[in-house]
Every structure is written in structure tokens, then in C-alpha cells.
Length: 612
View 1 (spheres, rainbow, N blue to C red):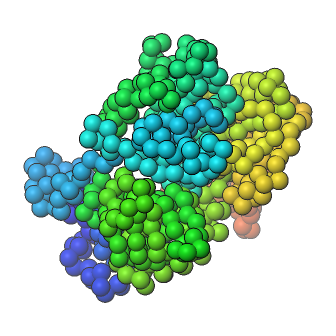
View 2: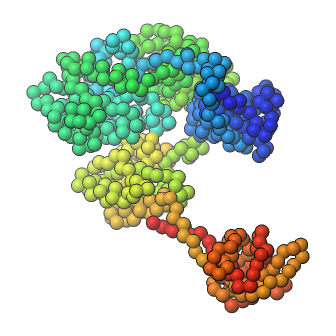
View 3: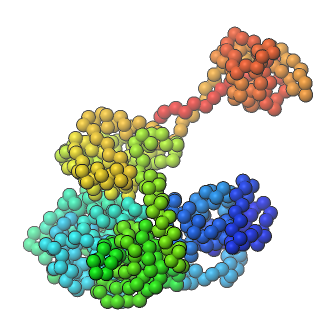
């Protein structure tokens, strides 16, 4: 816990006066207000809320946050839990320098246990542009020769050492698996290396991979490969990159590029230096002295060994004998092997490994969590299975109709994946929708291209909370099934005006509200009648529009505002009424106001939300 302020009950109860976490006596009254620090561990949050740690983890999972008991979460994440338990919270005041120094000596030395971890690098690019060959050269192994036809058919996780510093590489089939993992909420990659062949330049799949990397919001390093070929033209590649708003450093931009040859090994050292430079700037650290948490990279069912999973540990250390849970799978780690097939006993942060011991293969992208015992592992997996359907509904991208009816101001950007029949149509439709952007809300086309809607488009939309737009194109059956399963909306158009009208309607639903004050009626006070309990009744004639019981009113005297309130009672003779219209007489009492004078005007008004 980083704050010196003592978290507890703000209404006078000290933290020590509450039942211990063992008692588990929940207090869910509306008067309870917890003072929470800016950051705290899940275990500490469970103690402060008098809840079982597993219940706290479940609430975090329901909100798409995967965290272990020792993991540090921020105040915003903590409020997701406290709100579910009916507990009001407030954040502790920032601590002074003196209290910070005192807290540093008293709190657990979490910061002191942090250690640098290897960066995780994903290799992306067009097929046959040399992704695996480049990784092969870096590792000085022969991975590419083992691939069917020289094409990567699965995710490989490997580690290379350069200048005594390890770097973890994920070799993916293009970008599909990279996005599938991210679509499941896992932020695995620290750096993306985009491989572009110097003789081919940017190809359609290269652009698609680039858009996926941009959507993931990770640093991108461009590796211009095949510089040994006679037709190599790196300047053409850099020009094409600039057309995609990717300006390399040679051209005055901030995108790092390296000219390499996977075949000869030229430029590999420079690429590795750039990777380590970006990693150094990111200050990647983790605590190896805690229970492990990580991500499933791939999993399969081995006939001889049973379910196996390639895992990447983010924090903590995974050891043989640990109980683990990942998605709906659970088990106890029976064996661990590295990428060379060598048996190891533990996996530190930032390191990939293959694990045996799950009861069933988990799915790529599932969060891996080491837990204290078998009971916890089993119950966590079962809870995740129960929550899978509800989570998919909660985490899916919005439909266009839902966007229109969103609360004002909750969205600032409408993400689209756009596919059309030909490139000319792509450019025309993209220009037509992007011009609809306004100062307060933007249309962001995160990917566009010609051809049918594919699974890759759906996964990118899911990961980016986007809507897929198809203009005079179809959708692959597998992509349609995936969209239904992931809750991604696919909309088809063949008339551009219908498309732009729908997008414009969605944007108006997303804009901050514009409210206009509308006067709905006026009444002039003609006579004043005293009443019981010191409340005066204003005898009025409605001169314009109508007035309603409970309406907001302004009391005007000689054109000046005297008081603002609401109509408490509205009578016609002795009868209680809800509305009086122009030309009728009525008696009115006003909430909290008695100082009427003849000639005062009651002005009923309301706020109307208008379109921009």
C-alpha cells in the first residue's frame, strides 16, 4: 500500500475496530464509507471490505480484471469491487513527504522486490516476408526449416540473449493470434516488430498487421528485411510507411527502423539494440518473489502427455507443484520445459515455457493464475466457466444502435473496421465516414481494405470495441460464426448515403449533450391567500402555455429573478390538479418560498436536450 493515510471507515470506525477478515461479517449499509489509498493489494482490499479474497477476485473478473491476491490494483479497480458490495468509498488524500518516507519504512518492500524483466516482442508482417527466418537468425537455430512449407502454423514463444540481456519473442502466424489474445483482454506484447520485405514493400497483410499493432497501442519497430536481394528498395518502404502516418527516424519521424537481412545476418545487432533501447525506456519490471500470474499463449492436447500449455509469466514465479487456474481449466504443475525442450523447475517473469498438469487445454489469451490450493484452483476455474457467457456480453463491442443510445459523453470515439469490394470503394467510403468526425467526437477507421469480411477483421473489432462495416461485400461463414460468438456487430450496406446517415446518427448519440432552457408556461399572481402552518397560497391566472405540479419555476418580479424552486401544490378551487392551461385560475404553493407579491410572474421551464 503506497499511501500513509489509514484506510478505514470514514464515519468514525477505525480499521482495527472492524471484524477481522476471518469473521467475514459484511457490512453493506449505505452509510459506510471506506477511505482507500490510491493503490493497494487485492488481499488488503478483501480485509478492508470484510470479504473473502476469492469473492473480491470474482468481482474483478466480472469486470474483466484478472488479478491475484498479492497483485496491486488502483483505486478505480477497487471501486468496481466495493460498488458490487454496496460500499461507498473515497480516496485518501495525497500523503506528505514526511508521511511518505515513514510509509516507505513500514509498508511491505514491494518496490524493493521489483526487478527488470525481459521485454516481450511480437513479430508481425506479411506471409513470406521473413518473420520466422529473422527470428531464426536471432536465435541461431533452425526453426523455419521445421515449419510446414516454411510458413508458421502456430504460436512459438522463444527467448534470445543479446548483450547478456534476455528478450522474449512471440512468433505468430501473421497477426491473427496476436489479436485473438488481445481480444480476450490480455496485454501480452511490450514491443511489436513489423517485418517488411525490402523488395516487396507494404503488402495488404502488412498493412493489416500494422493496423492491428496500432490498435494494440504498443511501440512499433520496423524491420526492413531481405536487404541482400538485388531489388531491395528501403526508401520505397519508408515512403509507403509515411503514407500510413508512420514516419521513420531517417525521415524526421519517431518510428525506429532497422535494415536487416535474415539470410546474411546483416543489421541484426542493430535491430536488437533498438529493441533493448525501447525496452529500457519502458522500464519493464516485475516482482519474482510472489505467486505467478501470466497468459496462456497456446494450448493443445498431447496424446501421450495430456493437456499442455505454452505460458508467458508476467509477474511472480511459476514453480513445479504450484496449483494453477486458467479460464475454465485448472490443475497442478507437474512439469515445465523451456523452448529447447529442457526440463526446468521454475519460470520467472517475462519468460515463456511449456507446462503440463492442466485438467483440460485452456484457451489462448486466458489469464494464468497460481493459487494456494487445489480447492481454490477448481473453484476459480468453475466460476470462470459460469461467468464466460456473461463476460462475453459485458465485454463485447457495442452495436450501432447501442452507441446511439449511450449516455452522453461516455464515448469519445467510434471505432470501425471497414471492408469494401474494391480499393476505390474503400477509399471513397473511408473518406465519407471520416469527414463526419467533429471536434468532440471522432470516427476512427482502425482498419480498411478490399475483400470479404474475415475472422481477422472480427477479432480486431472485438479487441478494439469496433463495429465491422461491409460495403457491397460478403462475410466468410467462419467470420460470421466468430462474430456471433464474440458479440461483434457486422453491418452491411450497398448505398453510401445510408451508411453515412447511420454513422451520423450514432455520433449524435455520442456527443456531449446540448441543453436548451424552454419556458413551457407563465402564470401571474393576482391575489395572495394565507394558509395554515404559515404557508402562503398564490392565486394565479395562467397567461401562457401550461404549468404542472412539480414543475421547475422561476419567480420574476419587475423582470428580475427573485427565486428558483418547484411547484409544491397546484389546486383548482378545492381540487388537487396536475396541470393548468392558459386562461385558467389556480392556487399555487412554492417549495421553500412565501414572499409573494401581486404582479409576480411564475415562469415554468424545463431543460431540453438538443442535437448539434
